[in-house]
Image 1 (cartoon, helix red, strand yellow):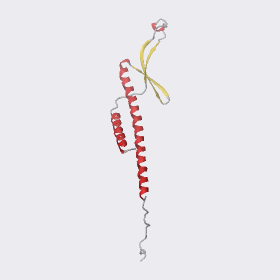
Image 2: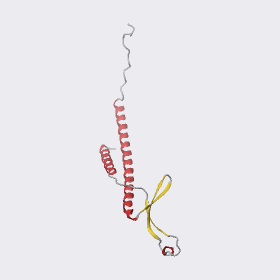
Image 3: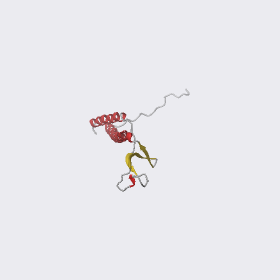
Length: 140
């Protein structure tokens, strides 16, 4: 990988970090619109063509191997949608940052290998001279 490509990847990584720093409120899950029947026999929702009461909104997500659900008030639906969108953007940016970082690490590793091979071709490591004791003994 060329030095120019490495510099470009580093620039992209800094851009992703800046975008991650600007992430707002986020929330995971899916927002679901529901219409429910109340169960009263004389209610309009009991008829076949009756759509049911609603809509009511619920947020559903997985946590600790369980599905969690939270009822969202109608006035908070747009805010919740924006938070879910922000969470998805955060996940996408995180994946991009990880992939880019792995490519950079690999490129640097290849650069280190190339340097080691170049050093080996130039003569490699010099042999160290043997340690020699002092010519006079300590007893004298």
